[in-house]
Image (cartoon, rainbow, N blue to C red; front, side):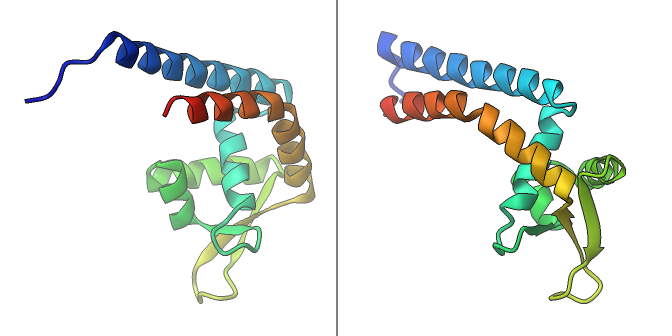
Amino acid sequence: MLKPPTVDDFARAAELREALRRFQRTTDDTTAAAGMTARTYQLLLMIKTGRRGNGRASLRELEERLQLGKSTVTELVLRTERRGLARRELDRDRPGAISVRLTSAGERKLAQVTTELGDERERLIDILSNLR
């Protein structure tokens, strides 16, 4: 039988949800001011930090890391490419596969938003560290 939550459990859950929501709201506001959506920012971030460490990511990797379906990722990449922030190209290491990389404009937008979110990101990390 599960033990019912304590007052402290509720307080920690509320603190976590508040911190996550504040971070999301700050991200939404910051990305909007930069002329993009939070989802586009997340895409740029996942491309830049691709698992192979070469500044590229496969569509499959983006699906996994963003926790989005294939058609959603494909549409997001296409929209981001049309805006000149990313570029699809044939993957040199995997014949027939596509990888996505940032353009110089995408690099600049990503750096701008990541910098602007720095304080809020650190605040969230501090809160998460203290919730253990």
